[in-house]
Image 1 (tube, rainbow, N blue to C red):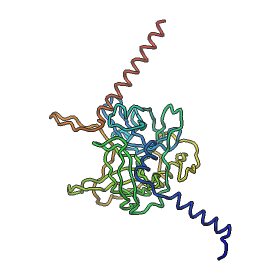
Image 2 (cartoon, one colour):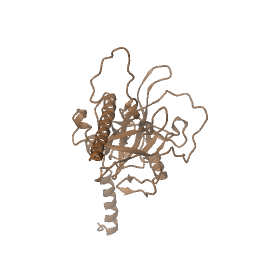
Image 3 (cartoon, rainbow, N blue to C red):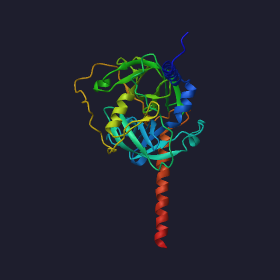
Image 4 (cartoon, rainbow, N blue to C red):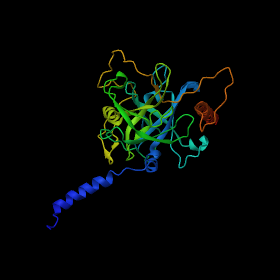
Length: 332
């Protein structure tokens, strides 16, 4: 038998390295790896009478967060909410919103696209490196691949993990040219908006964006959810001059950050009539409408209406305290 050459050994080592690095993780390992970089996003208008909630992913350690545009934009005006709060994951999620949502930071929108339903936020006052979600190119993902999602589904828990597979791929979603999405039966509900869809290696391959729950004839639909492919998101981020940690930590080139505006897409939005299809709804949480008839209040780990009300009150109290302190200083 001929001895193995150094060249053959080198090739074998490369093959072994590829196999070792592509080992699929368990859902628990994926959660432990990615969840610290997943945040809750809450926006509210002046006066706190309107708001929205969803999920986001930290994509740069200095505090850049990727989420859905509909999470941070007022529905009527199409402009960013006056107040944006982002909640970082605690060391342990207990189901008590007071402790689970204690790590709050303010944020502002630096760029967004309504057609692609993407928004980029910058966290204020970041003084230390934050955990980051690795982003995959999504081109390797195939129908049948196992995926997981992390988010804050309504009636569910904060930083909830759900599992499933990629069910289908859809090009030009909702007649938006270049808007490529995965369909998945992974459990997604309102509150998952903007959160990551992760592959078996714990890397983000999609941004969860919409669900279909009722057909045109009113028949309930189950397990039909959509996630914008990460390849579309990374291309949009490049257009904003933003790099993300891709694959094995290789940074993409970065550049000048563009201001918060609805950036024109490199690919136009088709104006033709949309084909008949089941209606889809976004995954954002919105405060419920108050009824004149008393309704039973379901038990849930968090209440968006109350969160928005408490946040507005806390900020108003802080502003009053600052004014009072300034008044005392002026009288001295």
